[in-house]
Each structure stands twice: as C-alpha cells, then as structure tokens.
Length: 145
Image (cartoon, rainbow, N blue to C red):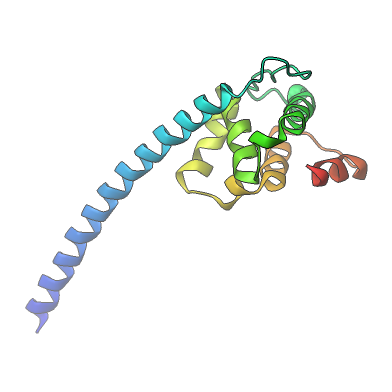
C-alpha cells in the first residue's frame, strides 16, 4: 500500500514538473506575443493625427502625469483603434521602457486582470511610480476614458 502511494506520488511529481516546464514555455511565448502586439500597436499612427504620438515612459515619476495625458489624448483622438481596455493597456505597455517595462513584466507573466482594465492599470502605475493625487477631477477624467 505504501509502495503504491509512493509510486503515485512520484508520478504526480513528474507530471507537475512537466507541467511547470510547459507553463514556463507558454509564458515565454506570451511575452513574445505581447511584445509583438505592442510593436504593431506602435504602428497605429494616422498620417494627419492632430495629437503627437506619445513619448516612451521609463519610470520617472515626474513624467507619469505627462505620459498618462499624452496617451489618453492619443487614444481619444484615435478611439477606433482602442475599442476596449485591453487594447488601451497594450498600447501603454508598448510605450514602456527601462524600469517601467520591468515593472509590468510580472503582470504579464501572471496574466493579471489589470491587463484588461485600463483604469486599474493606470492606478497601479500611479501607486508604483509615486503619482499621488488627491484631486478627484483627475480620477473623473480617467473614468471617461
């Protein structure tokens, strides 16, 4: 009986290891796909767009408000390309570099729900990069977009 349980436990451990390896491979593929999607989103620039394409954000907390306003403005003017929160978040991710890009990787690797929730994603950025605002008007503007 004990020997059968040990054999079963061993088989389960072997299967668990195989699943972990497979999961790691899938996460690598997901990272590649997210980066490719972000690269394609960077190409979404109409020739006569009245709003300039947003600058990259590398994690400087002093630039976060400017980055959020730039990206919100760009997405508002080009709303046909940003039909849902996942597309908006993917666009923001495509503009991240340096520390900001490192910050977002765990969310991508864990397939976090905030990747599909624009407002939650921006709030996480604000919390991490230190943009504290007590002005409720800013939150209302985000709600609109």
